[in-house]
Length: 552
Figure 1: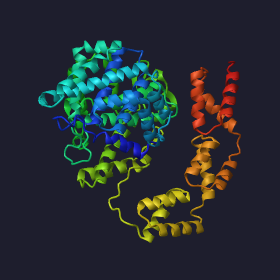
Figure 2 (figure 1 turned 30 degrees about the horizontal axis):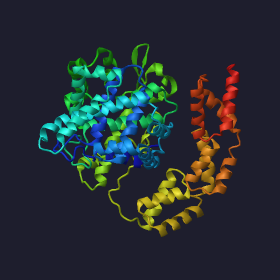
Figure 3 (figure 1 turned 180 degrees about the vertical axis):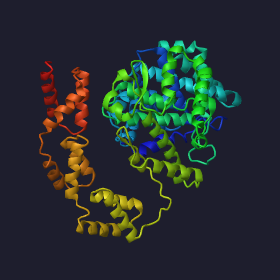
Figure 4 (figure 1 turned 135 degrees about the vertical axis):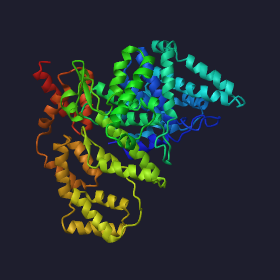
């Protein structure tokens, strides 16, 4: 699961001001907005280039570069490029070391690919070229705005020259030249740029302030991370979920943000607004785009929060659970609109949480926070526990020290909900404001009345991890140790899992391979199950047995 620290890191980009040694617009010039605009440029440039682009590498490359920039914060571009040129390998390794702890909740081998992207110059070479061009185009869009404001600013003409040289150096792929010759595509991306100025929560004081453009990128990245948590998501599902998240508020460039209370105030008003948005898209947006792109953009933006597939050329509304069961294949072109909606709400929840945490007393922030917290309590979408996600960012209005009785009641309520290890319970009581000496006494009380038993907890937890999450013994041990369970109890708990691990593993491996025995797929399968705690030899034996059954 995504960590709170990674979410907080993403929002740091909303506070990094660009061109902050120049006269510039006050809004829309944050690093978050620029990175979002860059990904729109990347999408268009990739579409111009054609099918040779690996869209997953492009998406992940954009995310990798986004976090790279956040870690290095607001270094002036000439200095940044000089540092990268002279000390690039050392800097990249340092950035990786800074990000590793934040990233360890993201599954699917994401961090390993980040390492490869940073350190292997030949990895994703075309996609790196596209992202470089997208970076310069997005920066040049900004520069054209600030240039007339800074005629007397020292070095402004040099910046202009460097910007032109940077763009010229990006002329390394066909799509760049196609885009350069298309007035309409350039107008499309300039129009999208207006989303950098459209403020969210317009009536509320917030920290940090966010704009529609940056919000769209946050939703896209969150949607991609959630998609990686799904069971072996197909490539089109990953691609679609990112770009659907990125494009989900595109009509607002024409209508501006119409907040939910307004949409819901009159019965049927939301349908009328949707019709107006569709009409505006047809009249303004689509004429700027090649006709071959219209269907894809429409697929991303119409009914954007419905999970859907394409079957025999027809769009069918489904659920994310059903995609998991039947339609998790590229040929169905699936989109998890329900998950994207969850990420959209998660983004709003985070913004409210951060403002409240900074001490901003706002009725809008508080009511939005409370509403979403209640709406998503215990809610699971497509296997993603959004209720748990919201719980990792919890704002306590009154951060007071708990009395002994309050702490004891808190402990009993937690144990009534589900069993806990001693360390889990202790940590939660600490965060709630219980005193150290009270915690020790409460733990002793719970042990005496058999409310708390690490041995029984370990046995039950091990069985759940095996039966529900299909983890191997190594991963189960690791999970139990992370809960503070003693080694003696861990070993005992694992010993009760008497079923031969290979017998349980065999059907799981067969399901994942899907009859594809190419080296790339086998290696991916091995990495997947090793991450889940199975031994290499057991995985290899299963693969060999399955290959034998298939006559391979």
